[in-house]
Image 1 (cartoon, helix red, strand yellow):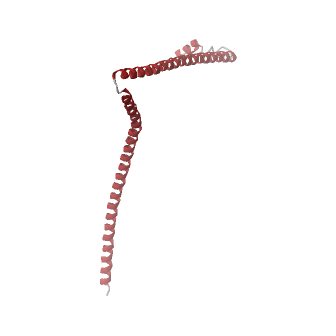
Image 2: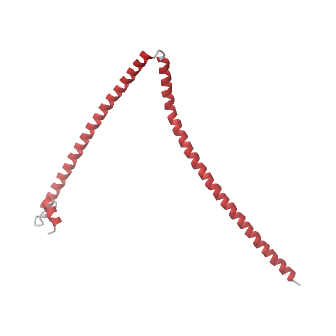
Image 3: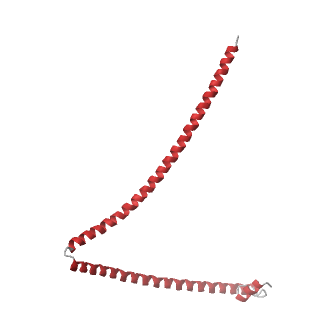
Length: 164
């Protein structure tokens, strides 16, 4: 018996060959159910821990948001104490924040359009190159055609002159 068969047999994966097939099938089924149950238990444990972590993250985010709001309020109070033009400053800052938010999509749009322009320019240049190559080929073919026609005309002219 090979070492692999011995390991499998000792782990219960391979049962005794002398056992009845029915008994082996029951043991195999029991092992499968046990493995499936262990797998489900682990999956449930993982899911439970995942939910716990998610809850902790949400709780922490809530606290962070509250702290952020409180800090903003404190900052406004502090500015009000030191700056006699606090309303004007606050309005300008809010306007700056609004403009900053408006600038972001505009910047992205510019980048996208620049990229599209570069791609279109590259395609345009490629087509211009292709056109130049085709024009060059056409000039070459027309020149070759003219030479052949002139040669044929000269030959016909000589044939006419050779006639009595």
